[in-house]
Image (cartoon, rainbow, N blue to C red; front, top):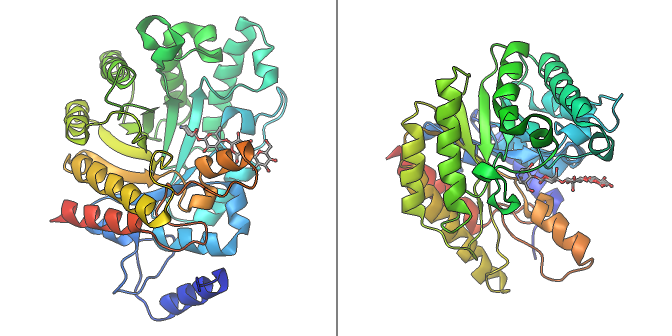
Amino acid sequence: MQPTRRDLLALLAATAAGSVAGAGLAGPVRAAEPSLADAAAAAGLLYGASIASDTLADTAQAALYRRECSILTVDYALKFGWLRPAADRFEPGGADAILAFAGKVPVRGHTLAWNESRPDWLMAMSTAEKRKALDHHIDETVAYYAGRLHSWDVVNEPFWPGHGLPGGYRDGPWMEAFGEGYVERAFRRAHAADPNVPLVLNEAMTERWDEYGAPIRSGLLGLVDRLQDAGVRLDAVGLQGHLLPAHPYDDNAFADFVAELATRKIDIYITELDVDDASFPADIASRDAAVAARYRDFLGAVLAVPAVKIVITWQLADSSSWYYHGELEQHPGASRLPRPLPFDDRLMPKPARDAMLSAFDRRRA
Ligand code: G3I
């Protein structure tokens, strides 16, 4: 019989009682059972996960974050549409609760300018009003969180070739407002609002070795060069790492791209790692093994690049994954639920967690 969440809590309490201080969220761990945070720290990395505000009320899952994570990303509470449900409202409560939970553990801000965060009130605005909305959003939000965040994803997903725009840029309100110049503008205003916070450009799909990934990789390299030539502060590039095994990939060639990016003297963060298991067998043992193999092979390749400093999974347990939510929304009561993450929907560790521990150990070697 699978242990219950009460069993897990008892285990975590026992672990805490007989343990040494670990690298996690105030999370002492038993020395014989390294947490992901501890294994990452031993390899000179930070490991963490994105977290949603409603997770804080789930004491078992919150305890797991405390044990396993040494950095957090705010999943959606810092997105434009969540912070600003209306033009005259600013609601930082969800993100503030995550910062309170995190205590001294660093928290990443995600994300100031994303063309996919499009509340209706914004989309109803004129172009001139959209320009004011982005400027005001960045000025107010970055000032409000000044000194409190590890880093900001200033711009998320600048590219999407599928929108057919020149340069392969992603379409949306900020492209309408400023054209591709919104990227540089966002970075400059974020820096002006908090000159000390590290600034990150975050991108998706660069891992795809196909007609979508190639232009995104080349676009990203060119954008980084233009931002640096313009004297914009850029501390790191985030590569999301939503691995899609159904699409072509080449981990070693991707690692070469990561190394090329790193020649720009910036850090590289893997910011949203998970594995879409939809193309794997229904059988859970086979699926978990295939997911673990993707974690093993992908991390084995990218962690060979010294500039890779942080690995963050997009949530920690399957039941909090965007894939899981999406499947239940599309198919309520679905019998096959996604298993993209290191812990399952009962918060039990999976082969993917072992694969990550091994990859961190190999990086240390
Ligand atoms: O939890 C509330 C629920 O209480 C409420 O009734 C419902 C009403 O809409 O909303 C629920 O929150 C949803 C949340 O996911 C949790 O499921 C939000 O509507 C929904 O917008 C939110 O979607 C997030 C999505 O970005 C859009 O912001 C996903 O959680 C999040 O995983 C996803 O993350 C993105 C990254 O930011 C960028 N990279 C891709 C990644 C996956 O799409």
